[in-house]
Image 1 (tube, rainbow, N blue to C red):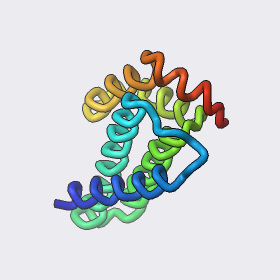
Image 2 (image 1 turned 45 degrees about the vertical axis):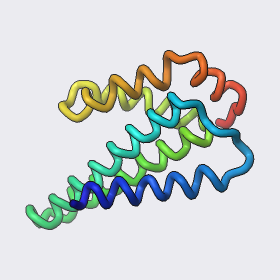
Image 3 (image 1 turned 45 degrees about the horizontal axis):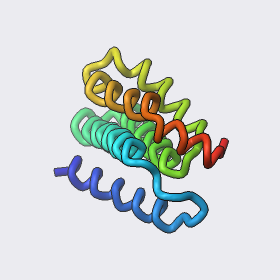
Amino acid sequence: MESVIAIITCSIIQFVVIYYDTEIKQPPFTIRIAGCIETAFGAILICIGLFIDFVENNFTIAIFFILLGFVWIYISVCLYKARNWARLICLSLSIIRIFTIFGLIFSIPSICLLYYPKAANDFFRENNHN
């Protein structure tokens, strides 16, 4: 139940940030899908942190996972805003994350959607935000 609430909350945050920012046009479909994938991964990290806090009572590790989840969601929102640094961080971390169980599920689509399509490359090139 918590994961569904976290994903819905993250989607609402993305909607508010993206659709009320008038300086950038709508991102291509591949960027939107990659952003949703990365947001879902951030929400899973937050849920893991909450699980560790409530079940294991290990506050330090829980805070680490929760903060990492929010940073990941911030990176996914910056993908929508055509921040090239977010794309580079996302691609780099996806390559590192590919060797984990969750990473394999999330990394391959994210790498393919952010790196290969011409629409994604053009989107970041046109908006050229660093």
